[in-house]
Length: 284
Image (tube, rainbow, N blue to C red; front, side):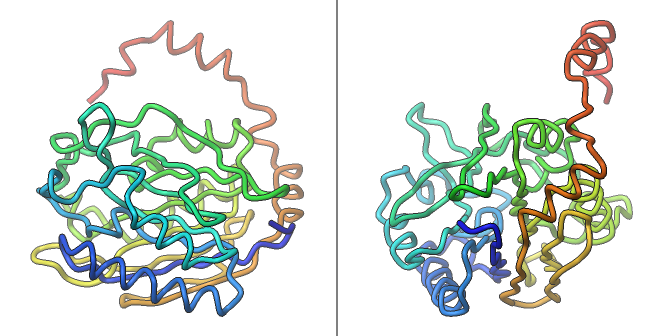
Protein backbone atom coordinates (compact mmCIF):
# COMPACT_ATOMS: atom_id res chain seq x y z
CA UNK A 1 0.00 0.00 0.00
CA UNK A 2 1.17 3.52 -0.78
CA UNK A 3 1.93 6.23 1.75
CA UNK A 4 -1.51 7.60 0.86
CA UNK A 5 -4.30 5.22 1.77
CA UNK A 6 -7.89 5.60 0.62
CA UNK A 7 -10.01 4.06 3.36
CA UNK A 8 -13.76 3.50 3.40
CA UNK A 9 -16.51 2.32 5.73
CA UNK A 10 -19.51 0.32 4.58
CA UNK A 11 -22.22 1.29 7.07
CA UNK A 12 -24.88 -1.34 6.47
CA UNK A 13 -28.24 -2.46 7.83
CA UNK A 14 -27.86 -6.21 8.23
CA UNK A 15 -30.47 -8.94 7.97
CA UNK A 16 -30.42 -10.84 11.29
CA UNK A 17 -29.02 -14.33 10.86
CA UNK A 18 -29.13 -14.29 7.04
CA UNK A 19 -25.59 -15.03 5.91
CA UNK A 20 -26.41 -15.10 2.21
CA UNK A 21 -28.30 -11.80 2.16
CA UNK A 22 -25.59 -10.10 4.17
CA UNK A 23 -22.88 -11.52 1.92
CA UNK A 24 -24.65 -10.06 -1.13
CA UNK A 25 -24.76 -6.69 0.63
CA UNK A 26 -21.03 -6.96 1.30
CA UNK A 27 -20.34 -7.78 -2.35
CA UNK A 28 -22.37 -4.80 -3.54
CA UNK A 29 -20.53 -2.45 -1.21
CA UNK A 30 -17.19 -3.95 -2.21
CA UNK A 31 -17.94 -3.32 -5.88
CA UNK A 32 -18.82 0.32 -5.20
CA UNK A 33 -15.70 0.85 -3.12
CA UNK A 34 -13.43 -0.86 -5.61
CA UNK A 35 -14.71 1.29 -8.47
CA UNK A 36 -14.08 4.38 -6.30
CA UNK A 37 -10.42 3.40 -5.92
CA UNK A 38 -10.61 2.41 -2.25
CA UNK A 39 -7.57 0.63 -0.80
CA UNK A 40 -9.17 -0.62 2.44
CA UNK A 41 -12.89 -1.19 3.14
CA UNK A 42 -14.11 -1.81 6.70
CA UNK A 43 -17.45 -3.40 7.63
CA UNK A 44 -19.03 -3.34 11.11
CA UNK A 45 -18.72 -5.91 13.87
CA UNK A 46 -20.44 -9.22 13.05
CA UNK A 47 -21.46 -7.78 9.70
CA UNK A 48 -22.03 -11.19 8.07
CA UNK A 49 -24.58 -12.31 10.66
CA UNK A 50 -25.78 -9.04 12.22
CA UNK A 51 -25.25 -8.31 15.91
CA UNK A 52 -27.56 -10.78 17.64
CA UNK A 53 -28.16 -10.87 21.41
CA UNK A 54 -28.61 -14.65 21.34
CA UNK A 55 -27.15 -15.98 18.08
CA UNK A 56 -27.50 -19.57 16.92
CA UNK A 57 -23.75 -20.01 16.83
CA UNK A 58 -23.92 -23.63 15.71
CA UNK A 59 -25.77 -22.56 12.55
CA UNK A 60 -24.05 -19.22 11.88
CA UNK A 61 -20.42 -19.77 12.81
CA UNK A 62 -17.79 -20.06 10.08
CA UNK A 63 -14.41 -21.72 10.01
CA UNK A 64 -11.48 -19.84 8.51
CA UNK A 65 -11.69 -22.05 5.43
CA UNK A 66 -15.31 -21.05 4.67
CA UNK A 67 -15.89 -20.24 0.96
CA UNK A 68 -17.44 -16.88 1.87
CA UNK A 69 -14.00 -15.44 2.60
CA UNK A 70 -12.68 -16.38 -0.79
CA UNK A 71 -15.72 -14.79 -2.43
CA UNK A 72 -15.24 -11.57 -0.51
CA UNK A 73 -11.49 -11.43 -1.07
CA UNK A 74 -11.84 -12.01 -4.82
CA UNK A 75 -14.57 -9.37 -5.03
CA UNK A 76 -12.17 -6.89 -3.49
CA UNK A 77 -9.52 -7.40 -6.17
CA UNK A 78 -6.51 -5.37 -5.04
CA UNK A 79 -8.58 -3.77 -2.27
CA UNK A 80 -8.21 -5.06 1.30
CA UNK A 81 -11.32 -5.65 3.41
CA UNK A 82 -12.27 -6.18 7.05
CA UNK A 83 -15.57 -7.97 7.81
CA UNK A 84 -17.18 -9.29 10.99
CA UNK A 85 -18.30 -12.88 11.59
CA UNK A 86 -18.85 -15.57 14.23
CA UNK A 87 -15.80 -17.82 14.15
CA UNK A 88 -15.97 -21.51 14.95
CA UNK A 89 -12.60 -22.18 16.54
CA UNK A 90 -10.65 -25.41 16.26
CA UNK A 91 -11.22 -25.72 20.01
CA UNK A 92 -14.98 -25.96 19.47
CA UNK A 93 -15.63 -22.53 20.99
CA UNK A 94 -17.19 -19.52 19.27
CA UNK A 95 -15.58 -16.12 18.85
CA UNK A 96 -16.76 -12.65 17.89
CA UNK A 97 -14.20 -12.12 15.14
CA UNK A 98 -13.10 -9.78 12.37
CA UNK A 99 -11.60 -11.16 9.17
CA UNK A 100 -8.90 -9.30 7.27
CA UNK A 101 -8.99 -10.12 3.56
CA UNK A 102 -6.44 -9.21 0.92
CA UNK A 103 -4.72 -10.64 -2.16
CA UNK A 104 -7.59 -13.00 -2.84
CA UNK A 105 -7.67 -14.76 0.53
CA UNK A 106 -8.17 -14.51 4.29
CA UNK A 107 -4.99 -13.01 5.74
CA UNK A 108 -5.72 -12.71 9.47
CA UNK A 109 -8.46 -12.88 12.11
CA UNK A 110 -8.86 -10.72 15.21
CA UNK A 111 -10.89 -12.28 18.01
CA UNK A 112 -12.63 -9.81 20.31
CA UNK A 113 -10.68 -9.51 23.56
CA UNK A 114 -13.06 -7.62 25.84
CA UNK A 115 -16.53 -9.18 25.94
CA UNK A 116 -19.16 -6.91 27.54
CA UNK A 117 -21.54 -8.23 30.16
CA UNK A 118 -23.50 -5.11 31.12
CA UNK A 119 -26.65 -3.29 30.06
CA UNK A 120 -28.33 -5.33 27.33
CA UNK A 121 -24.96 -6.73 26.23
CA UNK A 122 -24.23 -10.33 27.20
CA UNK A 123 -21.42 -11.38 24.90
CA UNK A 124 -19.57 -12.90 27.83
CA UNK A 125 -22.24 -15.62 27.90
CA UNK A 126 -21.98 -16.39 24.18
CA UNK A 127 -18.38 -16.07 23.02
CA UNK A 128 -14.92 -17.05 24.18
CA UNK A 129 -12.34 -14.30 24.61
CA UNK A 130 -9.57 -13.71 22.14
CA UNK A 131 -6.05 -13.84 23.51
CA UNK A 132 -3.90 -11.95 20.99
CA UNK A 133 -3.62 -8.41 19.67
CA UNK A 134 -2.15 -8.66 16.18
CA UNK A 135 -0.82 -5.85 14.01
CA UNK A 136 -1.58 -6.47 10.33
CA UNK A 137 0.77 -5.12 7.66
CA UNK A 138 -0.75 -3.37 4.65
CA UNK A 139 2.18 -3.11 2.30
CA UNK A 140 5.29 -1.20 3.33
CA UNK A 141 3.71 1.87 4.92
CA UNK A 142 0.80 0.75 7.07
CA UNK A 143 0.41 -1.37 10.19
CA UNK A 144 -3.24 -1.80 11.17
CA UNK A 145 -4.60 -2.79 14.57
CA UNK A 146 -8.18 -4.02 14.90
CA UNK A 147 -10.13 -3.45 18.12
CA UNK A 148 -13.73 -4.65 18.00
CA UNK A 149 -16.21 -2.28 19.68
CA UNK A 150 -15.74 -2.74 23.46
CA UNK A 151 -12.05 -3.57 22.89
CA UNK A 152 -11.56 0.09 22.09
CA UNK A 153 -13.02 1.13 25.46
CA UNK A 154 -10.39 -0.82 27.40
CA UNK A 155 -7.63 1.82 27.81
CA UNK A 156 -4.83 -0.74 27.79
CA UNK A 157 -5.65 -2.08 24.32
CA UNK A 158 -5.20 1.08 22.19
CA UNK A 159 -2.03 1.76 24.19
CA UNK A 160 -0.69 -1.73 23.48
CA UNK A 161 -1.58 -1.35 19.80
CA UNK A 162 0.38 1.90 19.65
CA UNK A 163 3.33 0.31 21.47
CA UNK A 164 3.19 -2.55 18.97
CA UNK A 165 3.81 -0.16 16.09
CA UNK A 166 0.29 0.34 14.73
CA UNK A 167 -0.16 3.47 12.64
CA UNK A 168 -3.80 2.79 11.74
CA UNK A 169 -6.71 1.80 13.99
CA UNK A 170 -9.72 -0.14 12.71
CA UNK A 171 -12.77 -0.14 15.00
CA UNK A 172 -15.67 -2.28 13.74
CA UNK A 173 -18.60 -1.85 16.14
CA UNK A 174 -22.24 -2.63 16.84
CA UNK A 175 -23.35 0.32 18.92
CA UNK A 176 -27.07 0.76 19.61
CA UNK A 177 -28.75 3.51 21.59
CA UNK A 178 -29.62 2.40 25.10
CA UNK A 179 -27.44 -0.71 25.03
CA UNK A 180 -25.39 0.44 28.03
CA UNK A 181 -28.43 1.79 29.89
CA UNK A 182 -28.97 4.39 32.63
CA UNK A 183 -28.95 7.29 30.17
CA UNK A 184 -25.49 6.58 28.76
CA UNK A 185 -25.12 8.53 25.49
CA UNK A 186 -23.58 6.04 23.04
CA UNK A 187 -23.11 8.44 20.09
CA UNK A 188 -21.47 11.11 22.27
CA UNK A 189 -19.42 8.50 24.11
CA UNK A 190 -18.02 7.13 20.88
CA UNK A 191 -17.22 10.62 19.60
CA UNK A 192 -15.08 11.29 22.67
CA UNK A 193 -13.57 7.81 22.79
CA UNK A 194 -12.45 7.75 19.16
CA UNK A 195 -11.10 11.30 19.20
CA UNK A 196 -9.11 10.54 22.35
CA UNK A 197 -7.35 7.52 20.86
CA UNK A 198 -6.62 9.15 17.52
CA UNK A 199 -5.26 12.32 19.13
CA UNK A 200 -3.38 10.68 22.01
CA UNK A 201 -1.54 8.11 19.90
CA UNK A 202 -1.48 9.84 16.50
CA UNK A 203 -3.52 7.04 14.95
CA UNK A 204 -5.84 7.56 12.00
CA UNK A 205 -9.01 5.73 13.00
CA UNK A 206 -11.70 4.01 10.94
CA UNK A 207 -14.94 3.43 12.90
CA UNK A 208 -17.57 1.21 11.26
CA UNK A 209 -20.99 0.94 12.94
CA UNK A 210 -24.30 -0.71 12.09
CA UNK A 211 -27.43 1.24 11.27
CA UNK A 212 -31.17 0.62 11.38
CA UNK A 213 -33.73 -0.66 13.85
CA UNK A 214 -33.86 -4.37 14.68
CA UNK A 215 -36.32 -5.17 17.43
CA UNK A 216 -35.34 -3.12 20.47
CA UNK A 217 -31.90 -2.33 19.06
CA UNK A 218 -31.56 1.12 17.46
CA UNK A 219 -28.22 1.17 15.66
CA UNK A 220 -27.46 4.85 15.24
CA UNK A 221 -24.82 4.69 12.49
CA UNK A 222 -22.37 7.57 12.78
CA UNK A 223 -19.46 5.67 11.22
CA UNK A 224 -16.49 7.97 10.74
CA UNK A 225 -12.90 8.34 9.65
CA UNK A 226 -10.50 10.42 11.75
CA UNK A 227 -7.00 11.57 10.88
CA UNK A 228 -3.95 11.27 13.16
CA UNK A 229 -4.90 14.52 14.94
CA UNK A 230 -8.45 13.37 15.69
CA UNK A 231 -9.99 15.53 12.97
CA UNK A 232 -13.08 14.10 11.31
CA UNK A 233 -12.49 13.45 7.61
CA UNK A 234 -15.82 11.73 6.86
CA UNK A 235 -18.93 10.83 8.84
CA UNK A 236 -22.04 8.82 7.97
CA UNK A 237 -25.57 9.65 9.01
CA UNK A 238 -28.10 7.22 10.46
CA UNK A 239 -28.76 5.16 7.32
CA UNK A 240 -26.80 2.89 4.98
CA UNK A 241 -23.81 4.68 3.52
CA UNK A 242 -20.36 4.30 2.04
CA UNK A 243 -17.95 6.94 3.32
CA UNK A 244 -14.33 7.35 2.31
CA UNK A 245 -11.30 9.52 2.92
CA UNK A 246 -7.59 9.70 2.17
CA UNK A 247 -5.12 9.32 5.01
CA UNK A 248 -1.38 9.85 4.85
CA UNK A 249 1.38 7.97 6.65
CA UNK A 250 3.50 11.13 6.90
CA UNK A 251 0.72 12.91 8.83
CA UNK A 252 0.77 10.16 11.43
CA UNK A 253 4.55 10.32 11.74
CA UNK A 254 4.35 14.08 12.30
CA UNK A 255 1.53 13.72 14.85
CA UNK A 256 3.42 11.06 16.83
CA UNK A 257 6.59 13.15 16.78
CA UNK A 258 4.70 16.18 18.04
CA UNK A 259 2.92 14.23 20.81
CA UNK A 260 5.09 11.14 21.47
CA UNK A 261 2.73 9.34 23.85
CA UNK A 262 3.72 5.82 22.82
CA UNK A 263 7.42 6.64 22.52
CA UNK A 264 7.55 8.02 26.05
CA UNK A 265 5.42 5.30 27.62
CA UNK A 266 6.92 3.20 30.41
CA UNK A 267 5.48 -0.33 30.25
CA UNK A 268 7.90 -1.53 32.93
CA UNK A 269 6.53 1.04 35.38
CA UNK A 270 2.96 0.06 34.52
CA UNK A 271 3.80 -3.57 35.20
CA UNK A 272 5.36 -2.65 38.53
CA UNK A 273 2.28 -0.65 39.52
CA UNK A 274 -0.02 -3.53 38.60
CA UNK A 275 2.06 -5.88 40.69
CA UNK A 276 1.95 -3.46 43.62
CA UNK A 277 -1.80 -2.79 43.39
CA UNK A 278 -3.36 -6.06 42.18
CA UNK A 279 -6.70 -5.07 43.74
CA UNK A 280 -7.10 -2.43 41.03
CA UNK A 281 -7.76 -5.23 38.54
CA UNK A 282 -10.73 -6.39 40.60
CA UNK A 283 -12.46 -3.02 40.88
CA UNK A 284 -16.13 -3.31 39.80
